[in-house]
Length: 282
Image 1 (cartoon, rainbow, N blue to C red):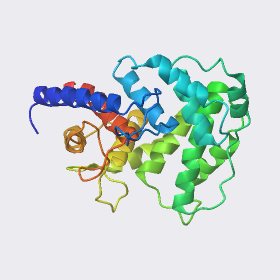
Image 2 (image 1 turned 90 degrees about the vertical axis):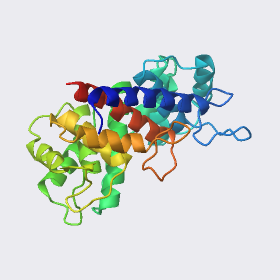
Image 3 (image 1 turned 120 degrees about the vertical axis):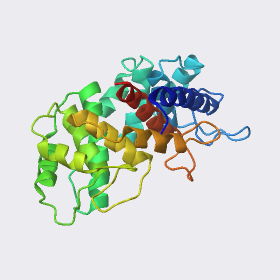
């Protein structure tokens, strides 16, 4: 890996290319779509949200902001599922206009963390993702209540009460995110030890003790699990190398060098580089 000054220059260039990629994904009505082409535009809330957080991260104005606001306004009368409300409400908040839509806040107030119905790893991962969205929405737009189920499940996961479940870095990141939303990032030594154990030379992070696969999701989970748990990152140069190698010709970051990029993965790569810039300068 080159000297830190050269790495910083490479990160800066990668960030500018990444933001140009985001801008190229904007549709004529203001929304964003990662597979947009000259003849195909299908804007959606998911891609629009990850475009907006990329502009915020880079402290850049959102292009055609009024059209983006109109696009989000057009979506306020539809959808009640957790993910729909999450990307819509948080997108509107990024643009400074959530309080204008009390019916949206009413729908958010009806959301509750659903019971965990199965203890297999896929079901638990999906449940944690949904619980995090509900917790963030209720804390921001409604009453921060109804969180006892998630506290119990995370406690059981940490205690090893689910025999079919094997701890991994992605789920540990989700648990830390939920605990942060609940202001309960205390007494997490077990999670901190696990995160530290997942750091590995040349990889940056691994998913489990026996895994050697690496992708953007794992790197993102590792970096920000360290940030939340107060764990020092020991292989920052390896992580930066993997992220830079995953940038495509159009400027977007992908899950891995051979994969296609999208706006969520692009944001993850951009945020990891942005965070590690300070770490490498220290």
